[in-house]
Length: 368
Ligand code: OSB
Ligand code: MG
Image (cartoon, rainbow, N blue to C red; front, side, top):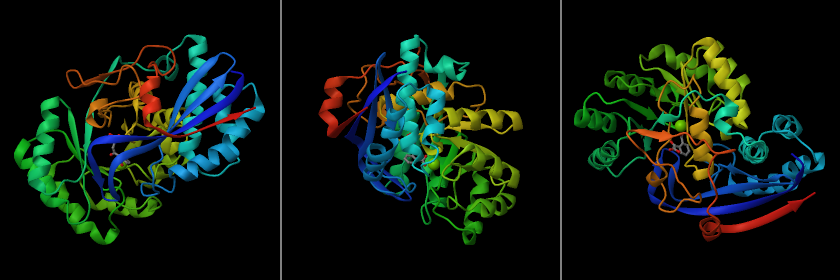
C-alpha cells in the first residue's frame, strides 16, 4: 500500500463489570486504535496496551509516545510498503511489540481490503467458527466466582479460565470444580508466584486442569522448566513468549508444554503466525489469548484462532462479555459455544464511527 498517514486514538470503554487479575482491577478498558490512511483506502488496527504497565512493561502513554515519535514516522518515511515489510522496518526500535502489532495490523487490513481478501484466508484459516472460552476475573469470594462461572456456562462458553493469585488459588479452583464437575477448566496466574510456591501450585494437580498459565515471572524461563517437572498440570506460557525466538527457547528448555499466542504481545499477527507454525512443527498445542480487545482485535483474533494448530479453545469471548457498546457494526456474538470467523475483506468488520467517536479521549494524525 501507499501510506499517507496514521490516525491514532486513545479510547476508554467502560467494562460491563470490573476485571480483576493478580496484577490489578480494571473498570474501564483504555486502548489505542490505529487507522492507516493509504492511497487505496483505510485499514484498522488495535494497540492492546493498558493504562498502566502491569501485565507487561507496555502502557498507553508510552505506546502513544513511541508510535507518534518513532514508529509511525518510520513507516511513513517508506511510503510504499507491503504488510510483510512492516516488522523489518520497525525492528531497529527495541520492544514496544504491542505498538508494532497494532500498526502492522492497520497496514495489513488496508492492504487486504484493497485486494478484496480476508485476513482469515490470508493467514491460512481452516475453520469458519472458533470455540469460545472465557476468562473470569478474581471475584469477592469463591461463592461469587461460582455465580459468575454459572452465568458464563449458561451463555454457552465451552471452556472456563479463572484468574488466580496467592491466597486465591486452591479454594477458588475447588469451588468451581465442586459446583460444575468436569468442565474444561484452566487457571491463569499472570506471573504472581515464585518457585517457593511449588507446593501450592502442585496442589492444583488434583483438579485435572487443562493447563496452568504463566505461574512465574516473564523472564523466569529456567524456573518454569524446573516447575514444569514438579507438576502434572501442563504449564502454558503467556507473558514469557514475546517472539518466535522466545517460543523456540522455551520449548527447547521444557519451560512450556502449551503456548498462548497473543499477536500484541509478540509484535504482530505475522509473528503470531510464525509461532503457530513452529508449534505445529513440534507438536505443541497453541491457543489464542486475548487482551480485552475491541471489535477490531477480536475479529483479527478469531481469524488467527481458525488456523489448524489452535487446538485448544481461545479467550475469544463475545463482545458483550466485556462491552455494552463495541466500536464495530457487528460485534462478535457467541452462538452454540462458538464465535464466527469474519469473512469480509481485511479484518472483516466495519467501524461504527459514532460509537468510536463516543469513546475517543485523544486523537492525533501523522502525515507523510
Ligand atoms: O493474561 O490472558 C491474560 C486480559 C488482559 C491482560 C492479560 C490477560 C487477560 C485475559 C482476558 O485473561 C482475555 C480476554 O478475554 O481478552
Ligand atoms: Mg494470561
